[in-house]
Length: 171
Image (cartoon, rainbow, N blue to C red):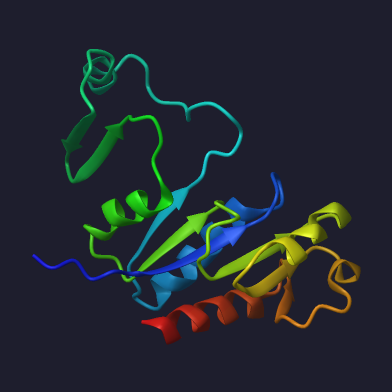
């Protein structure tokens, strides 16, 4: 089976900027367009993400398995551990599911096209630090003065429609 690489789009911003809320709304809008989406999130808070400790899959990993896959009633859960998972490896793994789009929450410095969320003044530094910014979502208009990139208030429905249109063009 040949795997077709989906289009990858990132939503980035600092902690508590609204990335997860934005992603949920964007996923909903893409669903209305019948666009298949998978997501991945970078756990940028240090340490490993929480998992259910009392489960067989965790015990398999603890015993030395590289990965453990659990399936039940159509739900598939992969628990895999190695020293580091590069973003490219994660994308390759998710591509096996044959989505049209992979939405990435985080991984600020990856080189994929991205939307940046700017909540506070200190967040605005991201606009000069990051590459491939396609759209900006701001909490206060003063945060993006002088920036020549399409920009929308975080609550503006037009911003979600703009993102959906960017993604549809890439399919």
